[in-house]
Length: 113
Length: 111
Image (cartoon, rainbow over the protein chains, first blue to last red):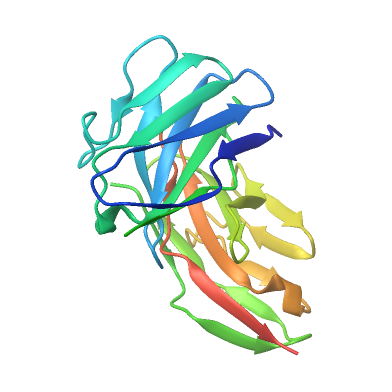
């Protein structure tokens, strides 16, 4: 299975600021995804990060708020822009191993104050 | 659309008790089914999976059998430990489509 590293693992951010989360995978993968997990909730897919093209966003998520980059097959970033306390969540990077199984990173735990 | 329904939590058991966490799904076609576990302060780990009817996934003493006739994928363990305390998520996936998660079940094991 792929090994997925995320940075930062935790952060406390001021409202109105932006934070970029990095996701590094130890092997080339076609499909990378970003999820959000709000406190006490299940996971919600934000977007699919496409290599070499714009990300595909799920309903309720927009590029201006969550810009995503995918410069190559092992790396992606998610930016949470103009943060508010409602953005306090765990943000998880995940990959599809092309065997129909999704693996997750350890998550980036963000608190907005 | 496709959906996953999990047993309401939280679930509290004593160490060495038998565990069942129910999971049922609604989906067209033939999804793959998964159990993920989230230990306190950590991300999601794949616990086990099954890709076709009657398959049994197993890992770390946990088992789940893909039952197409009852559209279920219940998670079981014969003797739980305090270290099994976590949130458990049932999920399904069809081909290249996205994962569909249940709401999660928080499990607490008391010594």
